[in-house]
Amino acid sequence: MTDSNPYRVVFVCTGNICRSPMAEVVLRALAEEHGLGSRLLSRSAGTGDWHLGEHADQRTVDALARRGYDGSAHRAKQFSQASFADNDLVVALDRTHERILREWARSEDDEGKVTLLRGFDAHASSMDVPDPYYAGPEMFDSVLDMIESATRGLFRQLEPALRLPRTSPRV
Image 1 (tube, rainbow, N blue to C red):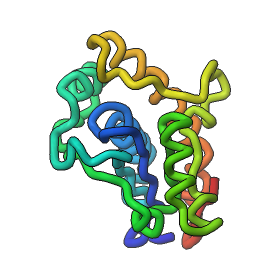
Image 2 (image 1 turned 60 degrees about the vertical axis):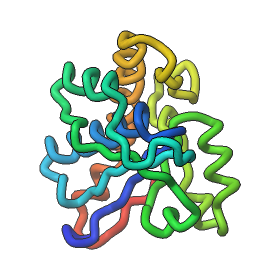
Image 3 (image 1 turned 90 degrees about the vertical axis):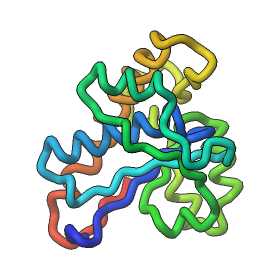
Image 4 (image 1 turned 180 degrees about the vertical axis):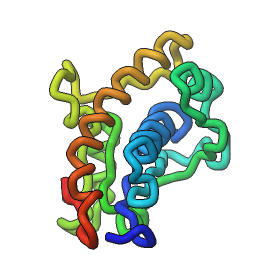
């Protein structure tokens, strides 16, 4: 791994306007904060196509802004089978996304890239990050709490390998 060949992480939720953009922004901020922004590429996608090209939900942008993150540049994208080749790690936000991603995997290598975000949070009471879309702004803050905690755990696992020259971290 070099700065021109960063480790690539994609977070996947349903429509790519609430949970996965939060995780994308949080991981990117952690990498930058630790001087590893050029060594890690954080992005996100959805399993569905109904929000393609849209900004993140305004409640997502607002929740991120309250914590000092900027989610304003986000545009929704859809994950596809071809996305496996473009990423080193595919992080599902809940078990439904994990199941869908494993079904889309075309090889053991693709399937081996799939993991659940909350698996990186030792204190998680559930493996699912709930979808806040049909809830109020306070749920977006609660979901961001879960995402920050789990993403810090993910980053702690990736960080030592990101600091090594020319190797790829594997989770």
